[in-house]
Structures are given as structure tokens and as C-alpha cells.
Image (cartoon, rainbow, N blue to C red; front, side, top):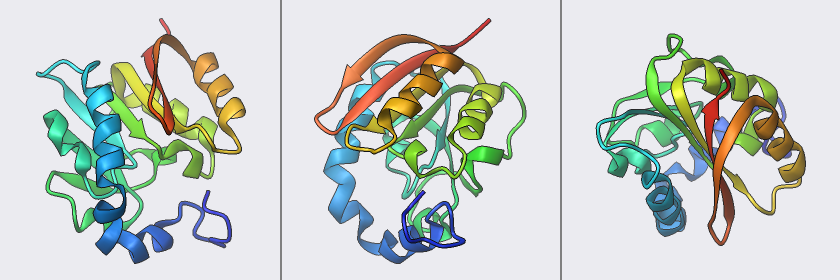
Length: 167
């Protein structure tokens, strides 16, 4: 949740207000994280990017994005849906891989977001968490409780959890 966002618990208004310059500010950082994540995604996979922002993940292949910020989605050059991670508008097991890049700490209900990512994934879920997020330890505990963590990759800013659904 973005602090001070009031009723806009997902920060959609905030991110909408910075959407025009978001890629100038964060492109290099996000592409670096996506390069790490891409190593764990088969080329033929259908990937759902939860919290896709401006759609920088389109570099990974066949991607569908979901984000609460209409302003961010207007900059995406891939198929996108406006929505929140806690109530994903997709069928069960509809994506080969689900990714969530530096967004989970913004969710109003992290547990619901994790459950939804597991629900729509056929098996693999990759989540990056901002190392300086106040809730890092609590969110990591939830991830480890919900998934089998197969690998943890380190970026200078994020910890990237490569997971699979529990049987």
C-alpha cells in the first residue's frame, strides 16, 4: 500500500500521476530485474504480469499484464487488463507463469494476492520484493508458506523468489 494514498489502497492514483515519466525513472532497474526473472521462464510460456505498470515485461515474450493504474496501462505495449492482484480477472491455471515485479508490497492484502497468483498459475510463480520494504520479512514468510521456493536470486534492490505451487 502506498502510504498516504487514502482510499486508493493500491496507489493507482499515485502511479497514474507518475505514469508519463515512470519508464524514464525506473526502466533500467526494472529491465535488470526482468532479465534475471527471464532466466526462469520458458520461451513458450504464457506469462501473467501482476502489477505490470507500463508493461516493461513485454520483453519476456508472450505476456498479459494486470495493474490497477489506468494511467500506467495506457503506456503498455502488450495486452493488459485493469484490475487488482487480490482479485485477478483470470480463470484458474490460466497462465504458465505468474510474475510480480516489485509490486506485492503495494497490495492492500498480500495474502489474498499470493493466493490469487497461485490460483491462476499452472505451476510457477516468480515474485520480486524490494529489499528495503518494511514488510519484507513478513511477506517472505507468506511466500514461503504458500509456495515451494525453488530458488532465490538477488538483485541490488530486490530479492527474487522463484516458486512453484504446492501439490
